Length: 225
Ligand code: HEC
Ligand code: HEC
Image 1: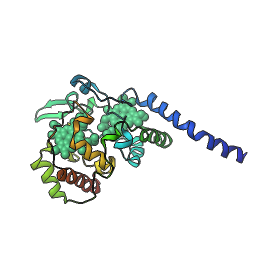
Image 2: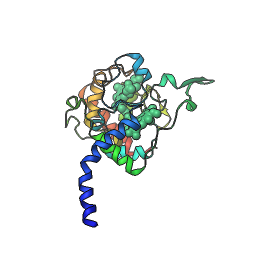
Image 3: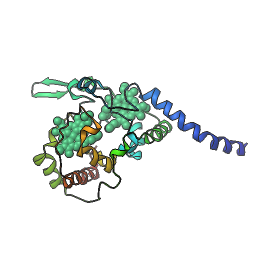
Image 4: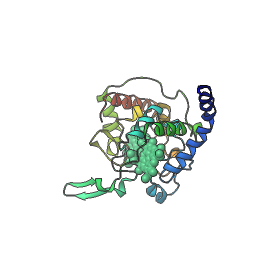
């Protein structure tokens, strides 16, 4: 019995990988593109239901994915496209929470299977240079000065819950959520990843790109959330 069980387990490993891709297609494909290309018109960008996952394996950290899929907490305070989830209140525009639906949740086994399948998706890997990010540090106050005062990023990104703009993903979990070399590539040229993104291409200096990632790491260490 026992020997038979072990053989079965060994045999089932490669088959499981193919099955996991099917699981992604069935349970996630209705909202997420799993193979690109990114939306190439403003309309398609606004109507997209979830972030593209075709390059999940070069973008996300596996540990984060596995945990988040079991306990998803919104990273984009105003949903996928803020224009669809903002209403005007007495004090100006606010996020219309009632228009945002909770993300589907997976159990531990499904989250692990989905994570393995997602980490195998590496479309556009040539845009990321391994080792582009060089480890370093920056103080929270210097980081915030650069992010807010000098570069105006705070207008669209929250640096702690409730502080900052809502049209982009929050940046206080990025240090745990995303891979550093991907971040450098994305900030250097957001349009190669998202041709229709509302994030301005600012031709940031390499020194600043590095400092931003140091800053995201410092924020992540604060454990907001
Ligand atoms: C009903 C639509 C829908 C389905 C189905 C769905 N998602 Fe999502 N997903 C979203 C939306 C909308 C967001 C963006 C909200 C946010 O930032 O939290 C999102 C965000 C994510 C993120 C975080 C992205 C980031 O960059 O922060 C991951 C990872 C993810 N989904 C994976 C999955 C997986 C895996 C499945 C299938 C098991 C799935 N999703 C099914 C709509 C969906
Ligand atoms: C006008 C709004 C806007 C401004 C200003 C802006 N961003 Fe963004 N940013 C976005 C949006 C929106 C996204 C998500 C990509 C998309 O869906 O288009 C994003 C994505 C990102 C990401 C990837 C995060 C993720 O979770 O995928 C990083 C890193 C980032 N921005 C850094 C910056 C930095 C650094 C600055 C300042 C130099 C900046 N942003 C300025 C809107 C903005």
